[in-house]
Length: 124
Image 1 (tube, rainbow, N blue to C red):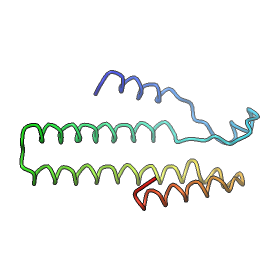
Image 2: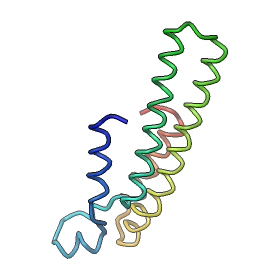
Image 3: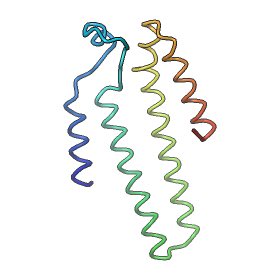
């Protein structure tokens, strides 16, 4: 793991939980909520592993490894990214969308559905 990446992960570990109630108490116009620190750390760790897999793919190409083996590793990276997306979808629905809907912010649901559609279609 690179030094910059470690410091980023550590910085997230120090973040306090931020909820809709906190936003309202602070008098914010919008309810800016986000994932819990534990979820962020888990997602970052998964992405770091995927980064290592991608670097391994680059190395395999440079070393002229079997194309079949490279394709298998590409499949593994795609599967790992799908797992990150599923984790993020679940956590986002639980910690961001649900509280937004509870505070009658229909935009939270609309934004979620738009992002979900783009994820499924595979494009932005």
